[in-house]
Image (cartoon, rainbow, N blue to C red; front, side, top):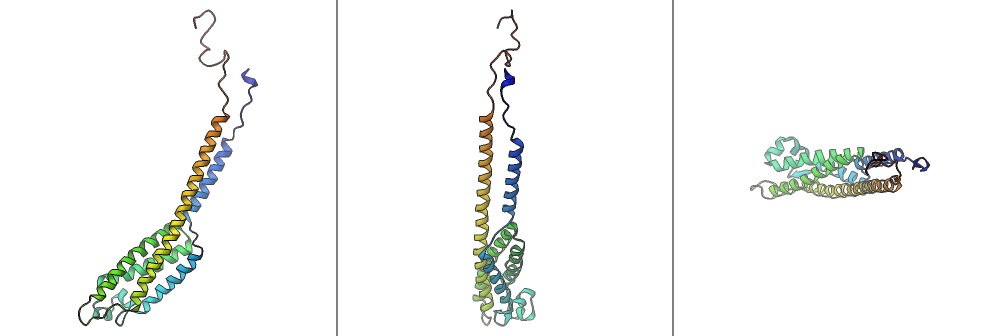
Length: 212
């Protein structure tokens, strides 16, 4: 009799809770970074970059003069690439790097990486424009070179932090999919076979005296 067949335990609710826990952990891992020792290196680089703005970037023109377009910067014929480089270094190299270290948010670290990489390219252009400046105009000074090298280092370290977090995210996603696949396979194995008696579906309409 079908009444004698034991019902398999219903662990759907338990598995749903387990899957929700996995998804919650995955979302938390995906949204955070763990810079570890690189966080100290990034913090030191940020302070060095911030200090480079008080150093001369070309001739006697300091980084702050380049940012705000003082008369000294105009007299030295500071070009647009230098100004754009200075603002990118300040906003992304200093601002977003400190924000990423403080909040430990993966998205903010991505923004710091993208901005630092862009500023590194603009730094090369800024140095080149000072090296090819007109006669009588000063070339690149120590502050510009320090800021450029620091941004290259920041790009490297942020890339390592973001990439390591991406690997962890992929591993967490793979573990979650494996757990879902294992649970589905277990549910298929635990399903009872279909009954074969006269009560089976498809035979209920075959009454005595009627052709099968």
